[in-house]
Image 1 (cartoon, rainbow, N blue to C red):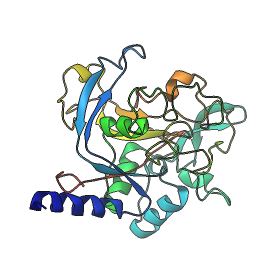
Image 2 (cartoon, helix red, strand yellow; image 1 turned 60 degrees about the horizontal axis):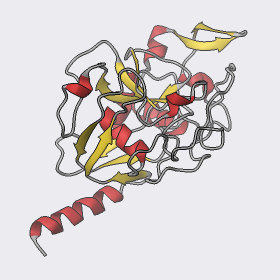
Image 3 (cartoon, helix red, strand yellow; image 1 turned 180 degrees about the vertical axis):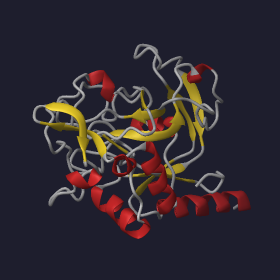
Length: 269
């Protein structure tokens, strides 16, 4: 057996060994959509090296462990307020932070009210990184070309993901893994919470970015978020190709994140 193949097998075995993560194999996939949102095109082939992705978004329990060990103070805590729901309306609430929603029974719910900067800090502590937008979309498709949604072509009806929920003072998120995984074994790729990606957002990047391992634009005003959340009411927001963006300092009760880890051939974590 050639040394290069032995090396590759060893690399894949090491990636599979990361607890709570799923291997996404290297290779091309079709990214984007011709008939979706305004900035989802043009559809184009992208090649990605293999990487490993968290099975579920980062939980309250995991984020609490990070804070205990590092003393990290989130963007919302530093600002002294965050966007939330109270007395029948959304607005900036003094003293609101991710800690406000870490109540008994919610340890395995996704952490929210975390900015892109908070997500980056967690990933660095965990020896991981945020996924690129391309990595996120490939992972959402589950290796099945032409997938509209992580579960297939059928429109969401409430049995595949958490969405179209009414707001409440405690966000109506669900525990990770409640709904069935996609074909890669990933849970909650859409619905439940939006997920931060590493990239700066650009409406025309699909037409200008590289065909292999696109890292996103070099600069921008907002960062990519993917996946929809518990409060989206439009089913198109739950499609694998749907794109979203938010300022990196945004802290909202419907936005969290998950991490990835690169294969040996990638210089990133």
